[in-house]
Amino acid sequence: MTSLKTEVGDLVFDNPSILASGIMDETGMSMVRVLECGAGAVVSKSVGLASNPGHANPNFLEVTSGCINAMGLPNPGIDAYGDEMKIAVDKGNVIGSIYGASPKDFVILAEKMQSYGACAVELNLSCPHAKGYGIEVGTDPKMVKSIVEAVKAAVDIPVWAKLTPNTHILPEIGKAVEDGGGDAIVAINTLKAIAIAPEFARPILSNKVGGLSGAAIKPIGVRAVWDLHNAVSIPIIGVGGITNYRDALEYIMAGASAFQIGTAVMDHGPEVFNTVCKGINKFMKRYGYRSISDMVGVAHE
Amino acid sequence: MSEILMIKDCKKINSNTRRITFEWDVEAKPGQFVMVWAPGMEEIPLSLSGVKHEKSVTFKIIGPDTEKLAQLNSGDRIQIRGPYGRGYTYDQNDKKNILLVGGGIGIAPLIPLMKARSADIVLAGRTAEEVEPYIPTAKNFAMKHWESTDDGSLGFHGNAVDLVKEIMKDERYDEVVACGPEIMLYFLHQYLNKVHVEHQMSLERHMKCGCGVCGACMMDDKRVCKDGPVFNNYEIDLMPEFGTSKRGIDGSLIVFRK
Ligand SMILES: Cc1cc2nc3c(=O)[nH]c(=O)nc-3n(C[C@H](O)[C@H](O)[C@H](O)COP(=O)(O)OP(=O)(O)OC[C@H]3O[C@@H](n4cnc5c(N)ncnc54)[C@H](O)[C@@H]3O)c2cc1C
Ligand SMILES: Cc1cc2nc3c(=O)[nH]c(=O)nc-3n(C[C@H](O)[C@H](O)[C@H](O)COP(=O)(O)O)c2cc1C
Ligand code: FES
Image 1 (cartoon, rainbow over the protein chains, first blue to last red):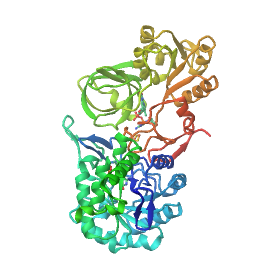
Image 2: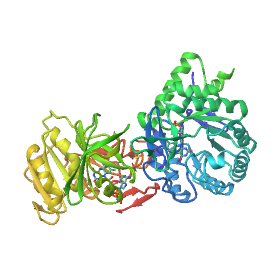
Image 3: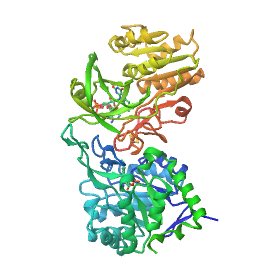
Image 4: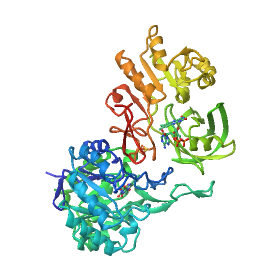
């Protein structure tokens, strides 16, 4: 018998597929739909202390093999978001994604997410297009460690840290998460990118800089998970460009205990979670793997 | 996918309505929409009012972006993304008796459908100038056409829903297809459910990505941009937010009718 049962530290999910933050998760009902479509868990939109409209349109563009977005972390603020969480946590595992500028911000947000019933918090230390947040706090190992430590001391649920690939010291930052007591690392967020319209001789996105996601970034994400697997011993959740079961297996075999899917929802709908899981199940039968954990990191052996 | 295209024509339809025409070599269906942008404005969703090789968008000037768009001339360039969304479901060869109901700027997106299959049409507006520009096309392509204005300056004196009720005293329809302000669609949906006539409606919510990723345009568990913007009556029955609440650009819930 093969089983898709997935363990990320103390958390157990029915399968390893998780909805990535920022995709169809601004509202409770949209998260419910993704759970009902078969995702093992969903990550909420990244939520901050106060309401944020995000960047003006255009903030999204399809490019070859992916898309560039600069949504700018739109969210109604942690207090209003409680109603959305309430709707979703009734239907499955919801990980609360949060962003802030200081350890104190993260602590307040994490406590709220815990009180809303989140099964874990995901610290967004990696948004490439929000000034004062994201990358700006997530590429400094000392800052990362102090944020993780502070949140760990404040909540009982597992603390995941989502990291950016826009750095040459990713393993060092991964170590900082581990040293701070973090329960898992999520990698990767989008890569800094710009698209220019030659006819207009200017960048297309209102924020100019956005983040590249989708198929184009998969090999980079797999490499990031590979490097992290060599650097830390806490679980890793792989994300970036996963569209089918083979993409997901690349991440697992590079060292990921579970994986997230975002951009693929655009072309394949929320049904993509079920399709990918079915593909993994078939693959496991064919190649003699009994559990997801049997495959984690095997490419290193 | 996105393309930067040259405007063929920017035509004044009435005092506050413009139609921008452009050649665009992609397949599009009646009811689909595009995201339109040019430097100096925010990108906005607009329905296609022409879906052949020569395509068009017809829009009402209501704010800074439509204002900016209206200032463009033939030869200027715009970025177009799409076509996005599920258009109207129809079969040009079926024998269904169909009534199209367009309210205000919602008339324009029904034109490609009126040209694609036989149907009757209701052209509804607040004043005569919202309706008049479409009468020649309706004469050419619709089987029967009726007009209504809120101020009584043309045709039936009253709103679209009241006119539909009048028409249905004599006519039998298998299906109604409607596009217009949400308040019109809301009361039309209630009436058509009561008299058991199937229908499809084109809905609107604030859009950012336009293609089903960001979740900005949710109405209950549906993405208006990707799962819609056209929904049938059975789907709408399961969407309590229709006609009652919407999402702000920060995703917060805004209730506008209890
Ligand atoms: C699928 C769809 C198809 C549409 N088709 C047409 C059409 O064919 N013709 C037409 O005239 N209008 C259409 N609209 C509405 C059109 O997008 C708005 O009128 C336009 O965005 C107004 O921009 P503005 O800056 O001029 O006005 P603003 O003052 O910025 O906004 C006025 C109102 O327009 C709406 N709006 C603004 N930005 C957006 C956005 N990003 N997404 C959705 N709504 C927005 C809001 O209700 C807002 O209150 C459509 C909307 C949607 C969602
Ligand atoms: C439209 C959009 C919005 C996103 N918003 C967030 C966000 O709020 N928080 C976050 O941590 N990541 C966000 N991301 C990044 C994704 O969660 C994911 O890390 C990235 O897109 C790579 O995965 P993918 O290729 O499967 O999309 C967003 C991505 C997209 C495309
Ligand atoms: S506008 Fe992004 S999902 Fe509809």
